Amino acid sequence: MTAIAHSPTPLHPKQDAAADVLLANYKRSPVEFVRGAGVELFDASGKAYLDFAAGIAVNALGYGDAGVENAMREAMECGIIHISNLFPSAPGRALAAELVRLSRFADRVFFCNSGAEANEGAFKFARRWARSIAGPEKHEILALRGSFHGRLFASLAATDRPNYRAPFRPLAGGVSVVERDLKEIEAAMQHGTVCALIAEPVQGEGGVRVLDTMFLRGLRELTQRYDVALIFDEIQCGLGRTGAFFAYEHAGIVPDMVTIAKPLAAGLPMGAVLVSAPIAQTIQPGDHGTTFGGGPFVASVALHVVERLGDHTLLTRVRENGQWLGETLRGIAVRAPGIRAVRGTGYMWGIDVQERAGDVVARALEGGLIVLTAGEHTVRLLPPLIATQSDLARGVALLEDALL
Ligand SMILES: *Cc1c(COP(=O)(O)O)cnc(C)c1O
Image 1 (spheres, helix red, strand yellow):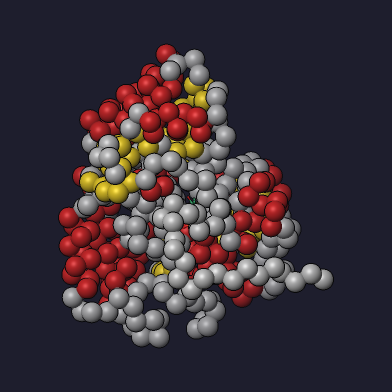
Image 2 (image 1 turned 60 degrees about the horizontal axis):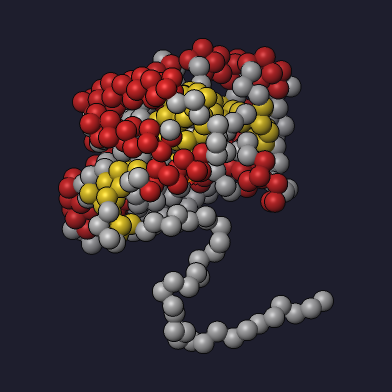
């Protein structure tokens, strides 16, 4: 065996500011932003960029929001940023109570620090519950074709992206991806070994696919019939992005658990699992935990965010403007031969393009518009939820320049 070569690093290296000391796991954009205001970001030269990525659905309230700033200042008044989960804390309780109320199904809330962590928690809760009602054989977790649920071992196993998965096998066991087909899903459930099914009501990374209302209701029926916990992953599509606080509201159903994260604490890391009473009742002290989850500072900020994103005026505007955005994008698709399809709802849209989506993203950026991809050939739009119709119109015009 050869020893790993060790080249000593000086204690105080003269760091070239441009030297890349960050792990190369991200492909970074050539543009660096130094300031944000409302729906815009600015680079060091002062050039403005309209932001239709919103930190990947995180910055729902845009940049420099006075309410968020105020919530942060007030949260600091008591001097406690963190207190650990060894002690009770009022902001977390208040936030949980508000989320429970808005969910129309949940009884308890678990706080964590990211989306993947929320899904991993939900998987554990589903297994704990299923084991208590049916024993250890009932432990399998199903996820859908086109899904994205995170990058940790179990959430990655539930993510349908071969190139994200392949280098890290073996992934967590007992997790499999099934077609978005009720017959196939029922066949998988008939063995009695499935404890949970996880689905994004609107698949985000998988190309912005709005799951059909009848399909979602079908999932609800099957999961009820076979005693399977239905988990909705609303980390991207939840908290107002579809024009309802939770995307599942459009289908008139409720899940057994819902996971949320991205916009929850205005860019501070926070995730949550909302849990129904029957599942919550099977969770004992020691079953799960995390150091930072639901601390008073993040919870106070999130309480402000939830108030703002649950506001009916905002939600109505997202629905109406989102409909306008969809119609406008479909109009462009008729004129632009390079567009194959337009899918989405609310402030969440995907545009299938013939060329590489990354090339469209790069040209849009040059033109002053930030957009995302969702796979090789889909351009994804996730504007901040505070974007007005004229902001959207400006973005669509910039996008059209990048497309044609
Ligand atoms: C972003 C995302 C996740 C993962 O969240 P992280 O905070 O990056 O771990 C999981 N599910 C969906 C639907 C997402 O969009």
